[in-house]
Length: 155
Image 1 (spheres, rainbow, N blue to C red):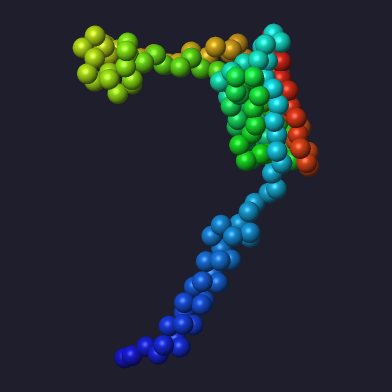
Image 2: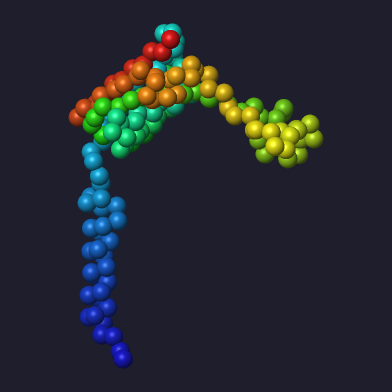
């Protein structure tokens, strides 16, 4: 059985329309998000390298950003309008082996892994622990239509 050229063209046209209207097209956009930025300070001083996470009070959406050297952050992709609980964390970066990178651990003869059965050492949060829990932090934000600025100063 031979397929007619018109049939092939028709099938390709239908497939193109389905792809254009479905996967990632405007129809699959989801709720509108708005830009959110601000500054995070501790005792009035900017915090560099902190992760700021907005978690909607209904638990249906979240957004995250990271602070720069001046304590400024911007939520990646913005956030849906609504009320949020906020958590802020800053973890101590793991130390690289002396004079090298993380890849050098395998070659570093002085490196001693944790004893078998011992818990691995977790990175330390450099901020007070309550700010790592959005329900205990006391930090909240409301995102509205348009540009949003949400500053936080933690003791």
